Length: 341
Image (tube, rainbow, N blue to C red; front, side, top):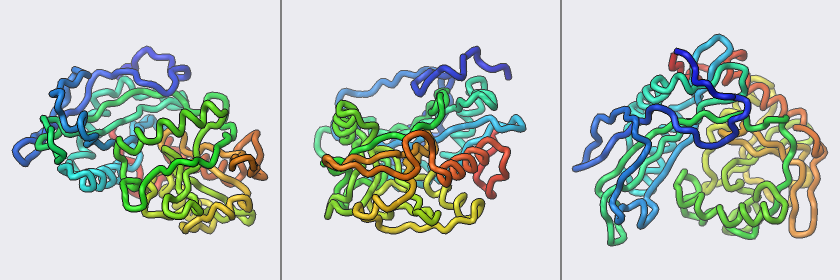
């Protein structure tokens, strides 16, 4: 199929509508078969559950063109599982996981012309989401829901190389101790908007959130998990029941252990020990890893030995290996790449 006439290297990370999206509806206790449609607009009642009580969750993943010309999606089964967890926590009906993966395949195939070519640095971002669609005025779950998937081509996250960012320790809590921090609920991201805009106004790129119970342990940022490297090369990630289980983070730990032969550790990370790490990064779907060069803590600075000019050596190897797997020039673990075409 002929590709769309798009300047792939300069499209940025924004929304560009594609030709098709997938839509399925839940009514009377069951999901319909769903279908591909061309209309990007949604019409719902003014009293819809999503508008009144924020009953919505979402996922995010990418489709890539590999070196040998295949179109693949990275570990969509894990996105299906995580969305199922989000739905259960928000008292929403689970969209069957096998149908989730099938729907991803359908919508990517339908929008093949928008999947950027190999070597462009761009990818096709995939956004599955679900929301309560019928009228709800009392505080209760909706009775009807809509599951949708749209796609949009996005440019390379780092146009001029991955320069380390500066983050601040936030005075806000990202999640409650027994709240919704471990799921991908829209309400979590709404709560993060004020802190991130405050951080930007103060000249910082992101927030570091500490655990809400004691404010002594590292949790995550508004949209990414932390990954640290010790001075002797061990890869360490924070462990907490209120951290979103990042698919990128879980994949990077496998890469570190099985591909690079590094020791890995998932554990509670106390903020007091952050100053002793050699490298720090934020990991997620958009950038894979964003290197952190400096953390600002209420007038004090933590500067990592890896510096402010480039990724540290271990994080660079992790980034190169995982992106190599995604792009097809490093062999992937079994089941990691869903081949669409």
